[in-house]
Amino acid sequence: MADSSFDIVSKLDRQEVDNALRQAAKEVANRFDFRNVDAGIKWSGEVVEIQGNTEERALAVLDVFKEKLIKRGISLKAIDPGDAKASGKVYKLVVALKEGISQEDAKKIGKIIREEGPKGVKAQIQGEELRVTSKKKDDLQEIISLLKGKDLDVALQFTNYR
Image (cartoon, rainbow, N blue to C red; front, side, top):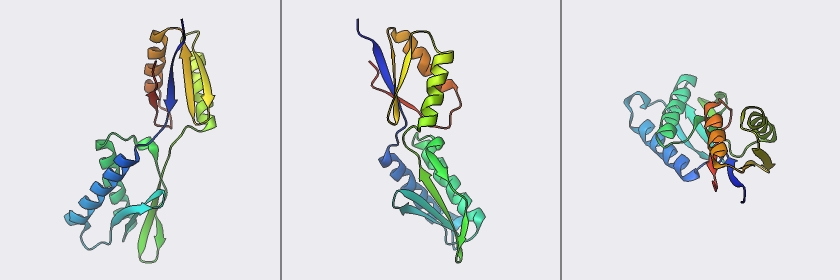
């Protein structure tokens, strides 16, 4: 009998992030407390750029963006907001999007699987994802629930379950 397997990945649905950004921009444009404060949010290449006339306004726009991401089912672990920096008359905040599992995070996840998971389960690093294999599907289910219970720095998805 062939081994069962699944992949652990960290991917972003760019369309959902774009939808969340558009909703946040619309809310910032329409909300009373953001009137006449030069606040906004937009794409700047591969990152999201937030601006406001004070640092507090820029952080308030970030909170609106986070709220929209949560409503769209995107983990906040997938974003990496920088610090607000003064740029002329406005404060700018750059939010980077994180995709893929780094080598050190992959090793950390592999160690958790080896130490706390059932015997006979193997985790193999394949670029920016992990392949987990086992003879029993129940063991794979146990690994998924184990990893969901852990507080890791990466937003994880489980794909190609077979």
